[in-house]
Amino acid sequence: MKLSESEIHEKIKTIDGWEYHDNAIHTTFEFNDFKDAFSVMTRIAFEAEALNHHPDWANVYNKLAISLSTHDADGVTEKDFKLARTIDEIIVGD
Image (cartoon, rainbow, N blue to C red; front, side):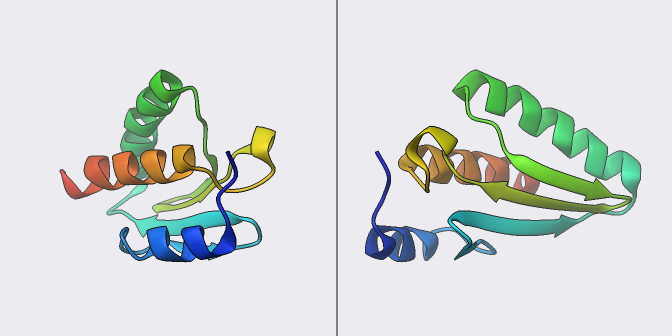
């Protein structure tokens, strides 16, 4: 179920480095090099597949930009926050 604007603004406070705009939550990470960025993308891909929820993302060399929204709900849902927390665990856990 799509979250309200106030719910999104409250939940976004619980995840560092993420912002809400354009009907999605967004973040960007910078790594040492392309190999490190791609390695993290691969790990995220396995988790995203397990959750059956996939990010919109872009990678240029050592930068990874991620946007999350639930297309079926036409907005941000709890699934997006769950995947955001999983992504943070993968990256912070390194």
